[in-house]
Amino acid sequence: MIQPLIRSRPRPAVASANPVRLALVLFVLAVGPLLAAGGPALPLVQPAFAQSSVGSASGLPIPRFVSLRADEVNLRAGPGMQYPIEWVYRRPDLPVEVIDEFDNWRKLRDWEGTEGWVHSSMIQAKRTAQVLPEVDGGPRTLRRAPGPNAPAVATLQPDALGLLIGCDKDWCQLGFGSFEGWLRRDEFFGIHPNEAE
Image 1: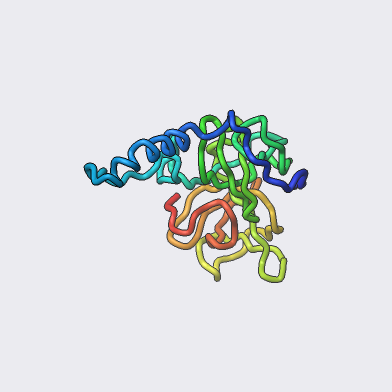
Image 2 (image 1 turned 90 degrees about the horizontal axis):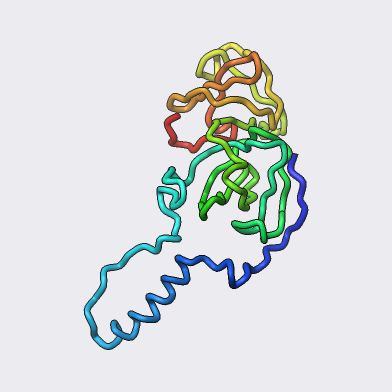
């Protein structure tokens, strides 16, 4: 599953500073005195490094769900090989949420809220789902049709991984090996509450 390795967040080296952030700081230093002296007003712009609805490197939506591609994926403290490994995921197809991008690196969040950076080659667009436990920690029921009274197809243990097939308003169709059925959106991790799949 997930194994913690290092829990510290080191400071990035000066050589690996974000060039966009550096450019913004230089811009403010250059234009600040002009504005203070009564110079022309500039329109407010959102910095390029701020989280937006589209990734700066991929052009894909942020946030978005993807899954892990490899049997072993290193989650790093920052976007680069020079940053220490904080976690090692040993579960291919685990759904994760991309919440930021920098060059070929993607900042991810897992179902427990753990965040860190992985190389883009370690993720795939394949949509998967991770079954969340019931309030008492027990299993979930995969249903034949969307609805709480639909017949049961299978009992799913917490953390089971399945393939996301599609969703309607409150229910999503999933595949778990040879079993196919429906779960409520809040019974698994791998889709946003109002996302149309």
